[in-house]
Length: 265
Ligand code: SF4
Image (cartoon, rainbow, N blue to C red; front, side, top):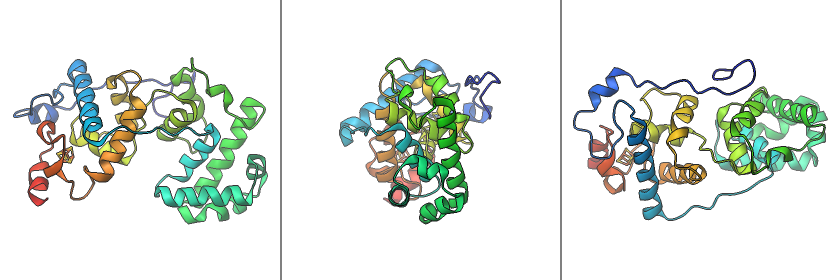
């Protein structure tokens, strides 16, 4: 997997912004991240974004779940909406009351249980492979060893990413909401916003954006940032027709499209 050494340690390659980003810097609003990606400027910018969203939209309530429930739920949520993923998760638990039964069931039965959320074949295989991995590495279907206050998130990410079908986002979400890790997973909402705010380059992948963002987030605020940005992406900085005219970040947002978007509001 990209970003992992043979020793299983997650690596974070140095980040270089493309020269086109430097050209876009002319006329950049005050407080926007520098085109060269100066780490301090970007840390301040990310802190400012979080402050503004918190002030305007209020606090967020992080949920806590069992890490296995969180891992399976996140696998089910890939490429679908939360409502369908939750329905599929409930159906899975109804048909197979224990994780052992899910693991031991014929793959086609697991596929049938989760088919309403799409990609059933891949998701069923990933779920069973995750459960087998957990039992093989822990001797039981539990991930309680990851719920430690002194958890090393890099080692834990590398551990979960060894599961076939589990990538950086799924591992990060599991550690955030299942284990209390100070991480900010990057989903499609976050990726769009981070690109528009030029915190990451315009063509950065979600995994690269996660690596770029990670050192820029104020300590202890990563989960809050994740939740604030998801809410912001659903309500304001939407993929289509973002509400730039009423956006609390309008004055610091460097996205060129915001002018026409604001005019359209
Ligand atoms: S101004 Fe528009 S594009 Fe920029 S952050 Fe706000 S909603 Fe998103």
